[in-house]
Length: 381
Ligand SMILES: Cc1ncc(COP(=O)(O)O)c(C=O)c1O
Image (tube, rainbow, N blue to C red):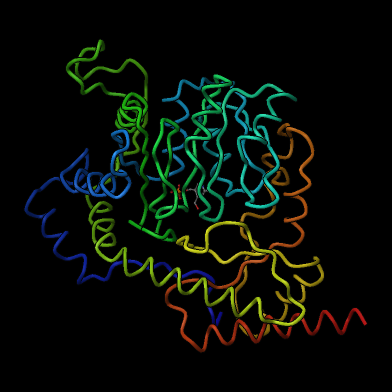
């Protein structure tokens, strides 16, 4: 493709070198090493709001493992039914299945495209729900207090899959938040993740589970070095922590550029006659990693995709098909009809969005979309 869809924004070898030299000096490569500790401390600092409850964090090898282990740390047992939005990356459901639980698919809010506490509440009235895994879809954050309130009212634990929402999702409550540090995310470490909550027991439970379940707390009832609850190996290596730290040094500048790029593309797409993009609601200051919007019809989407392909411009229907249409999840129960997700399934389109887009690339995308719109209009008349 002449214009790539998504190009990770990772540190250069020169930016990484000082961190790699620290690994050489430490001779510590994984198992809660000093760089993983420093990354955790720095990310915690970014997330901790002044005057709010102290926050606890732990790193993990990737967000999918983080979600699975967080479900377990919340006390969600195998066989539990976990509500999950239809519009999400498959990893949300993978984590539920890997935890031995059953996904129950819910619709999303028509405005912000997320599974809200109100939708979860309605689902609970219809079917048995033992836990909720909601998603900060396309980077749009949840209000943690609203989920804390939902859990307090219903006794149903919730967790937030904020894999793609670093820079947007706050962590100011008990409901745990899981971030991804995958290379394609706004803050990439290659692979990696972070779990944050004001509840230290949840976070220490996840931390122990990332290290086979081995108890390293001398004050815990389980003898030191022994396992009461088997975990897995999901630790963040020092090499990944090094990449995360090198990337964090560039965060503010990159976040500003991502905001500006999204504002520019939205303004230019909105100005195209006949397109009328349907945007997900959310603050325009959000740091985005994907450019995804709805169009008026499936045939318009086909025409835009075709025009882009002809021009060598990559497109992707992000998070589609919806979960309920994947062969692996087609038999999962749905908590009612899924009209919003179904409509988006027919009309969502993703265009190139990354910090390596040159001016000419952006112009080419706009011209191709314009051509697609014109072709669709000609076919219709
Ligand atoms: C919503 C969502 N959940 C989970 C994941 C998985 O994250 P990771 O690759 O760190 O396992 C992703 C990654 O794209 C995602 O978008």
